[in-house]
Length: 375
Image (cartoon, rainbow, N blue to C red; front, side, top):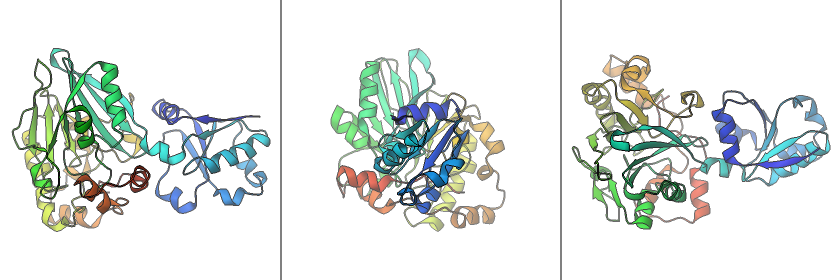
């Protein structure tokens, strides 16, 4: 039989289309338990590659010959070895090119909708990490919001669309992934915006993103209203785009709410988080479409692959927005927390400009699932 490479882009398409796929993950049990490829019709078998050094005879009966088979490891090498053995045993099999490291970095652009006066809004879905970035386009200009460090994805997309990136914005100082906002600004000459309360320790120049700030994109002007919304960080800022979309950063997700502890100040910031979610957001139109900076589970994806839902719907369905007791809310967001993100302190230092790790080190720092939400 045969074995060939599957690109991350092709895997993402299968997940968006809810296709059936059987994944043999040959990483160790701990790595698999912490983070794996997820999808509606994906089945997994985890067998560490070192248990397969003598062959695949003992697992042949656990692998369905009728389904598409993908072998996955951390970097690719082990999955190639196991795929070759499965091929020799009579299976048609794929291996994930670049392994989980490549999967962690892949982003898929999804059009969210059209804006007034011919503009467009795109969401970049990072399936392997749960990150969501955005590009607002209008009249030949663009703004990128909550960009990841793989800046070529955004600059190449802008080139394809024939637009110039004029602004790069971060809703807050990220702690789970390295921001690409400053790098995009340096590469394109764009203005980099950051909430000043999150930028007290940064060592680079930036434009202060403050409450009520409007940023024009294109000749027709798309207003991105900055809405101060602390809680996940002290400077967290939401954006209302085109009076239609609410970009919530890591304050509000589709199925959860943001955690306030990644700077070690959970008890101090929990009141800010509740004030933002229960008062500031309640003053906004319930018809606004919420566009968060992360998603937790693949079930949050819509049929078109986007992650978006009306604010009014979240007020009804999101448990984090329906806790009457202050005490219960405080307990939820300070005690019911997942492990902190991998290398989050190092990532914060990098996003402040105080550290500049090599590319491979940056990849290692980001490996793992999204952990920005309260469970």
